View 1 (tube, helix red, strand yellow):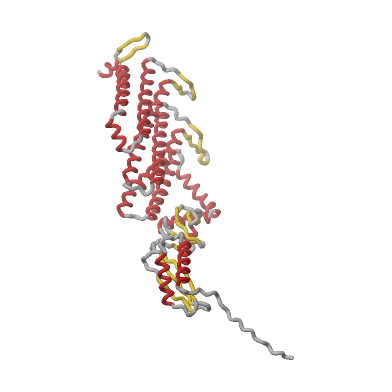
View 2 (view 1 turned 135 degrees about the horizontal axis):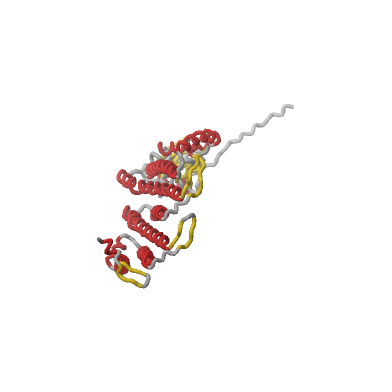
Length: 447
């Protein structure tokens, strides 16, 4: 009944006929265009956009996308009304005409609107409200931007796949030979599906690490090193499954891949023994967490902060801000001093010698005063003095102190030595130089 009414002729212009349904469609498009214009100029909509942290530029972009969508729908309706089904070109038995172009434009505009909604009303809103005080604005912005780009790619790939499927243009790109006589025809949608699987895996990683696990980390006050280790393990597991699914979507039989990989790994393992050693050492570090992100290591005579732990190598950064790439096997198999893994209080020391005859009690008090005067030395645990030995030329003392200036500990020691020298000069305490007594023995004339 309704279909008959919609298909009933309303107006005839020569060879062209306009039905009730087409007239209603045109009227709805005009009304929607007016509604969009009114909504975007309404103060309530402006308050909504401001409340969700959406800029004027993003707001205008959404308005433009909606207008483009209505224009594409209007274009398609006009083609149907005036029978403008002109063939543009032919390829592989497929005719590209005006309707096909209009449908493709409609799908792409819907994809752009979906991308805008997800990026601005979900991802951006989530990051703006997740923390009242973000840890790092630049880091949050980069992560948000990456998530938005992944969503954008997923939406557009889905749109392209929809266009290809609806228009029946899923061409065969190439044939993949798997071994023997077996071959697989790889089509456009096969490749797009494989890419889509990897992008969805990346989105799942983002959801787990930034939404699901973030709440658990915050609730249980998990340290940065533990967060990184758990996130990396989740990422590797998800990506392994995603790669297997992506290969499967290309039509590749996984039993053949597994069999070939087993034989290949035997040969590769001999040539890449050290690489595999580093790889498994990376897994050990992630699971055992003897070294975590942010730990201060003393390695090869340098103190450095652990910036990243990868599967094959780790990146540490000393005080000079030069990144050093260290194989993971070195962190697992060699002895490495980890200053902050269990206790953030790291002890340092400065040695000094005074002349024989000096007041040792006064020396002790002056050394403690020097430590107290240095602002970069912790008040607790308290500095303490150790009378080391009666040396050849001096009475040797060692001042022990704690400081959180891990990478700049040599600068702290330098400041402390300046202060010790100043106090010793004021109190007439002498720092002796090495002394040697030389006895000259006179030999008698034997002749």
